[in-house]
Length: 437
Image (cartoon, rainbow, N blue to C red):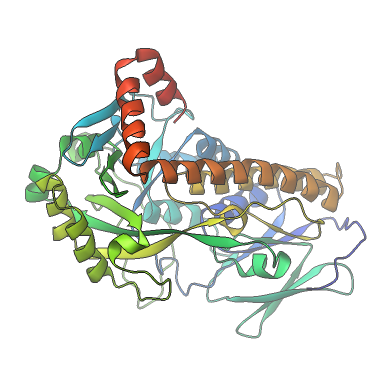
């Protein structure tokens, strides 16, 4: 690892280099540009929509406030208008669709920052790229960073090019190459679970077999033998009552087809311990169709509608569920991290994107102070990193606890179901759950 420069860098104006054009990196880029801070973003993908699944994510009040702070107002309003049909409830069911806990989500003003804002990943990336054509560079695969003679940082890319700035931000996701060089001791480990997820287009036939709870909102199904299924529907408000959909100014390559963000579908994810799928070794190949067959076999005795949804799905992805291992603060230098690049978490709390947005807004505030001469760069970064570690790894812990809870077996599973049923009949407990989501 390169020697960490000791001096406080006070270059003004700042130039910030961001590796990774994901949710957090693009949000930060907008926030810095709006503050008059020079910024460039480097993305390894060749086009804006390489590897972009159309699955839905939910922006919570933390994410809303970060986006409101960083995006131009017109773009934030575009995001509001691009959201999909809001959830009307959250349901916990058993494998036979018997209710364990059902919580209504009150209807809110769509412009409220306290509302949940469901949106597809494709639509969100379109919006976050809007207006950044001149600073986002594709086909730039990060190789390494090194110290410049003047104390700045040089970033080198696989194509032989390089860039120099006052600060490098690694926003390059769970497999961050920036983290690997900056913090080689930081670990991301397997939890022992495998997940297979799918997307099934919503037509009249699929809509007819889909359990009503899934059409209402996030549905968590606690099955036997430590098996778990999450399902949700992506729908848009009726076209007749909807304003024209905004189109986003995204430049596409000549050979690239436009990507639709109006698709309606049921998204689902089935997860269990690796050995339940008949795979013992971590090096065994994960073939989606094989895992789907194994998942359907594990769902024998489940409600027929749930099995049909999984069986009919052909658009699949599989992944081993991993989590980052908390680390203490490190010696601050002019390279830092954001979002999953440090605090990657399991998907069982739905917080990853929102925590990346939180980081982006916090880092923006820190760098604005530096640009305005109110703080030294390393001082501001140190404060940001300590806060990121505290909040980010707290979310990692909560996500891991949720994962363990929904995959528990025998007595632990019976206790979890009892607790949910109790919550369902005690109003004060149900309200506490709803307000703490």
